[in-house]
Length: 121
Ligand SMILES: [Zn+2]
Image (cartoon, rainbow, N blue to C red; front, side, top):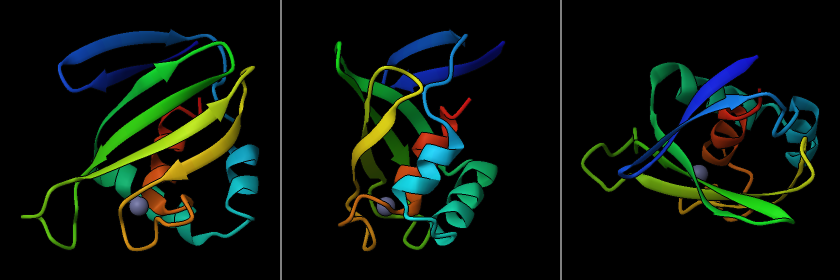
């Protein structure tokens, strides 16, 4: 059984994950097999740039996750707040992502992928 901590601002909930929210194959499909977001998201997770992950919406059809990520290139600027919607049932499929970073217009940037990978297992 995998466990992970999901935090959103002052809300702090610990989950015992007995199921897979999203599978790596689905993440790979979402980014059309590109490796760049995978490499970038690995760095984000390993370096602890993804400060918080939590859900902002959870209904029968889908769950919306939000992540707060340090802006490494400009540390003084506000953090990125990225969101991603996963369609149920779990393991789900990615509906869409959104991020205010330069590469985030498609919703397939490394920040969005880092959120997905943080709940991958
Ligand atoms: Zn981004």
